[in-house]
Image 1 (spheres, rainbow, N blue to C red):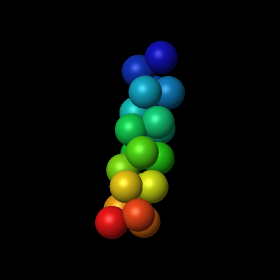
Image 2 (image 1 turned 45 degrees about the horizontal axis):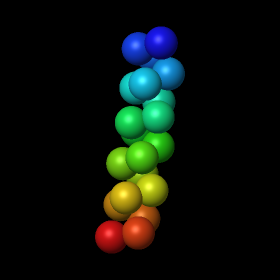
Image 3 (image 1 turned 90 degrees about the vertical axis):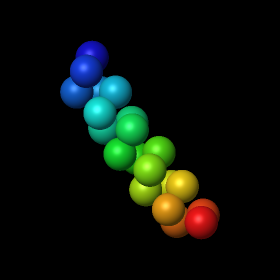
Image 4 (image 1 turned 180 degrees about the vertical axis):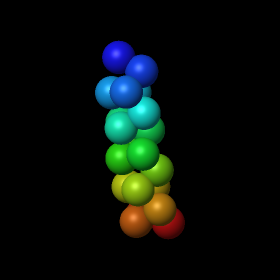
Length: 20
């Protein structure tokens, strides 16, 4: 699950960066 949380975190950061 840690790996999935890591991927979700990266995706969230990527989306946040794209918006900002």
